[in-house]
Amino acid sequence: MLKKNKINIQLLKKMCYSLIKIRKFEEKIIERYPDQKICCPVHLCIGQEAIAVGVCENLKKNDYLFSTHRNHGHLIAKGADIKLMFAELYGKITGCSSGKGGSMHMIFPENGILGTSAIVAGGIPMAVGSALASKIKNEKRVSVTFFGDGAVDEGTFYESLNFAALKRLPVVFVCENNFYATNSPQKARQANCDIYKIAKFFNIPGICVKGNDLFAVYRVAKESVNRARNGSGPSLIEARTYRWRSHVGPETDIEKGLRDKKEVEEWQALCPYSCFRQAILKNKLLKETDIIEIEQLVTNEIEEALEFALKSPYPVADDLYKDVY
Image (cartoon, rainbow, N blue to C red; front, side):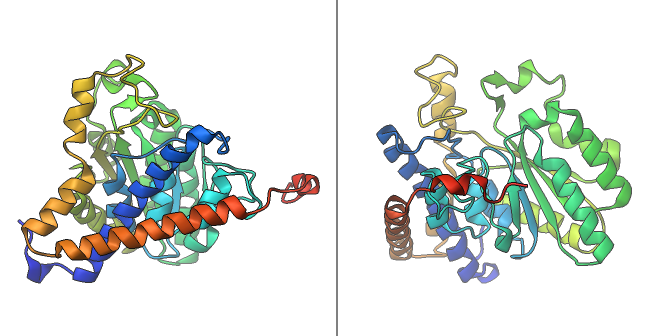
């Protein structure tokens, strides 16, 4: 049960804002993608937004974040500029990666986002590396790496957990378990589907949380981030969730026969935004007018960002050789 006297209302509004912003950003991509002016592949996170918000609201601006091909929500929750994100999707010179990276390779160093990797599990060792640097420099920075259940099939996941545990590094491993690696169900790939239990073999905390419950994710992440920041070492969070759309693109997997319609509908009934909205209204933490105001604010920001992207110029031929080392 939520209690108003224990809730920071400004934090609540900020989480509401981020949750809505991620959802509307992804919905705008779905709306515009058929125009075929966004030429890069897009991996959408609709249905998984609460994990990004719950974790990132516990981070400082200079904390490090490493993401995956499904990165939009993480970047927005960490404070990335959606004007630059939209511009990147459209391949414009004003994009956060100068139009060269597209959806899967966005970067915002000023927000601690040092890059996203399309390689499965590719961001995990990078987060461990940044955490090692932070510890050597005694900077009190925390590194967070997001990855899917498919990354648990990779050896670098286990190597990274071992090294981070051995050196007591300030890193939080966040597995967004949506039960599918592309179209391969978790139960067809992993003998033990309780990912959080892997942590015990490295003598670090392993926590399983309902990934669509923003408040639950926030509480779990707060504990793990504080643990990392105070020098107590890494944690592994398994946040169980579900993506509504296909592995890549704006479609769903239902029409392709890759997922059962009933399964998708059951998870859609657990929509992280709807559940969050119902909880704060039921407990009278915010008024409906507050939420409507936030929704309108985000809608305006999305339209402004899209307009910025569409009006921005494309790179010229000589730009091909810039930032290449």
